[in-house]
Length: 159
Image (cartoon, one colour):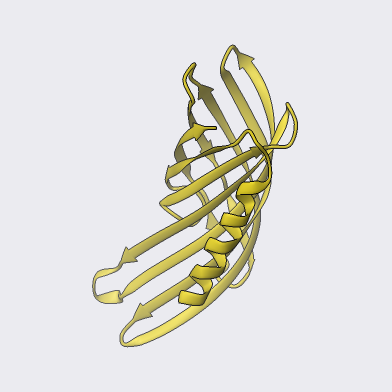
């Protein structure tokens, strides 16, 4: 699991040199397979961007053991203005997930690959802060086959 964590962090860190105008922050809530994600956005042009999210989640199921997940997701987003600093966005995405499921003295590692999309709304303040509310459903087609999704709150610093 340590190797997987290192690989995900290295991929995420390498994405920082892509463009000069970026945003970094957190996605909190039921987004994809993780409850907490470090989120990075980089524009491709005026109307679209890439978003990368590195997430972590840990569930304790009482006597049934624990379930830990590390995920890396990426989405391509088209951004559409509504009024002033309020935008909505939508786009396709993919996710890699690594799971450690421990119960009854057994430890099982799993790998998952999923596809899906993201849709949301965001507000960019006059100072370099953006708030967003979005949904990113993903369906794993390799590994632990489960539909991941839910609404997440994003808080990002623009630089």
